[in-house]
Every structure is written in structure tokens, then in C-alpha cells.
Length: 472
Ligand code: PLI
Image (cartoon, rainbow, N blue to C red; front, side, top):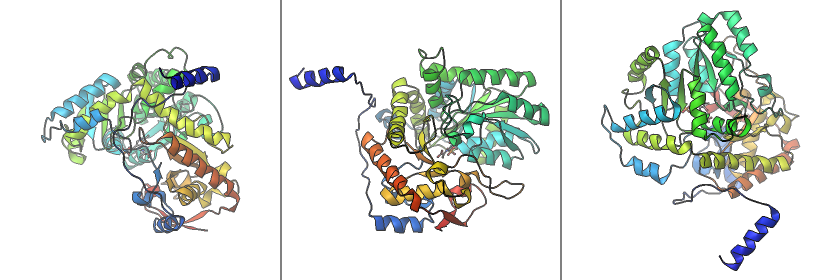
């Protein structure tokens, strides 16, 4: 040990400080480009003030989403060379099927091109017109597929989830009284399943406790109602159970994940998140009758039942990603980075959703811009302001994402009006997080001069992806 090492170590002990660091080092880099304020003005105008319509070449730090934006490992890239591109029976499918069975514990697997492909299949298979689907807060694509199949989504999440400042440790929990009231109102025979999401995206990445899913299972068993899990960020949910729930501190993430899934009847997955791949999804089921229907539908909409829209090499990378994703040190550093950004913002009293969730920091645009009404799109405005300031790309999760009520045609007005800074896995450094935090601070300092936006183009489905605005 050199004198300097010894000195640093002694200093560390004196200060009682022990930092965490990522369990990987960087082997390949992708250059990114800073733009001028004039270039960003032009790019934002061209994009109709919608960050989804920006060209990624005009973005400096891309926090639009954690979906498909993760860095794959050297093992995953090596796996890409082992792709078996046979139309039928690819060996990579059987590897994927085994990984899902091992880590999530479900019996039957249907591969899909991404999460919404799986949502489509399960919705078409089990929802009939007039059905009600209770769930712990809506997700955009999930609810749309439920509606397209003739169902109506009903929110049964705990009230705390709708309050961005509430520090409840499990804001993703289902409120069992609300669920009971729905069952009493519509009848169990009209509820094809409860739609349960791990770390609820629209609530700020908030987890569900093991106690809650266990109680949910008991209630659903009483009525013969199935539970299907949106497992997209369920690994992150398992981390929060390990951290916050009595009896789980010494259990590995992998064991917690499998126990949680065991209380559900199946799951759909956007593998582009937790599972560390750039494309892919799956549906996994325990009941043969539903599996048979979905395996039949997949050949209509996605591809044969042994590739479902993925290349063989993608399935190999996904099988490896599933295993890497459940490693405790990976999850700890992934959520540690999200928290690092959250702590910087809190030091400056910038309003964010509490507690910090799994995949993103959610800026509370209602408190950020108290002078802006929800109808002038505060969260969309904040995303535009951040981009103008520094080239950081974020996304709106508020009134624009919530869309219109299919019955009345009016805007839905969600309680949460949030701008999401979503952190891709294994991609950005702590220095990038510093730059992001400083940019948010700069937008915050200018908040009183900020006016809202007016919507000038609106597509029919999932409008947030493609709608356009102009400044007021
Ligand atoms: O984007 P897909 O089709 O692979 O997955 C759809 C999807 C389903 N459930 C949840 C909870 C999601 O977050 C999700 C996609 N989320 C995106 C794209 C996001 O940016 O959050």
C-alpha cells in the first residue's frame, strides 16, 4: 500500500465515509454532443415542444426513458453472437424460457417484441366487453390495451400514491377496501383479473409490499379472481422490500422477486427495463388455458411462439440480462444513482416525488410552477425548459400522458403532474447527474418567468408520444 493510499484510507475512516460505486467499469464509450442555446431553440420548435419528437442527435443527456436505453454487458454482447436465427425452435428461446422460469417462477412463456405486445395478447385473451379491471394506478399502454379489448380500468391504489409529498414506504400498494368496493359493485364474474404493477411508474416508481400482495392474493382467492403482474420493474420493487419490509433484509433480491411472483398468476414484461436489453418482452403464465390462447394469438400479432418478434440473438441477450438484473450489487448501485440525483435536488429544495422511487426522479410540476394551471401543461412545459437550458431530455407524466376519457372526451386531470428524469441503467456517470441537477436548479430559479404551452395537434391514441404544442 502506498503512503497516499494509507493517507486516503485513514481520512476515510476519520470521516466515517464509505461511498458506493458501480459493480462494473466502462469498456466502450458513445460520444454525446452539447448543442448551443440557438440550436436547442430551433430543435424544440421543430419538435412542437414535445421531447418525444426531438432527434436524439440534438440531445445531450437523455433521460427520456429507461426503456431500451440500458447498456448491455460484455457477456450480453458475447451472447449476441450465439443467436440461433431459426424461424422455429431457436435454442435461444429455450434459454429465455428457462431463465424466466428460474427467476420469475412462472410455468409457461410467450415471447413478444416488447411490453405492449404482451399487454395486447393478455388483454385480448381474457378481457370481454363490459369487464372491469382494477389496478394499482394506470399505465398508458396497459390501460389502452385493456380499453381496446372492451374493458374499463379502475384505480384501486392507496390514496398516498396520489400525494407527491407523502413519504409512505409502499405507495404502490393496492387499497383492499377500494378493491372490495369494486368487487361488490360490478361482481367478481366481471373482473377478469387485478392488474398489479411492481414499482408503479406513474406514481413515481413506488413499490408494493410483500404483505400487500399476500393480502391481495387472499382476497382474490375468496372470489376466484386472478392477479396478473406488470413485472417491468419488479426487480426494483424487490430491492425496496429488502430495504424496508421486516424479515427481508437478509434475503437476496432474486428470492424476494420469486416469492412476490408466486402470489400472482402470470406477468407481462417490458424486458427493455429491468431485464437490461434494448428490445424485447414476454408474457408468462401459470394457467394452461390462458397460455394456449396467448400462444395462439402471438402468431397473429407478433411472430412464431418461439421468437415472438425478437431475433434469436435478442433472446440470448435477454436470458443473460435476466440473470444480471437480479444481482444485489447491480440493483443497489442502480437505485443508488437515482437517489444521488434526488438528494442533490432536495438539498436545493426542489419539489420532487417522495420517497425517491426506482427508475427516475419525478419533479412535481404543480409545486414547481404553482402559478400555472394544469390545462397549460406545467410538466410538459418543464420538460421543454430543461431541454432549452442544457439539452437534458426528460418526459411529461401528467395531464398529457393521462389522455382523454373515452366516454366524455374531456382531458383526464390526474392529481400528479410530473416531469420524469428517467435514468437508463449502467449508462451515465455521477458527473452527468451533477449536470442534470444544476440544470433543474437553473429552471427552478427562472420559474416565475415561465408561461405554459397550448396543444396544437393531438393524435387519437397515446397522444403524449406525438402531440405538438406552442408557447403561450
Ligand atoms: O414500452 P413497452 O411496450 O416495452 O412496455 C410498455 C410498458 C408496460 N408497463 C410499464 C410499467 C411500462 O413502464 C411500460 C413502458 N414504459 C415506458 C416506455 C416508459 O418510458 O416508462
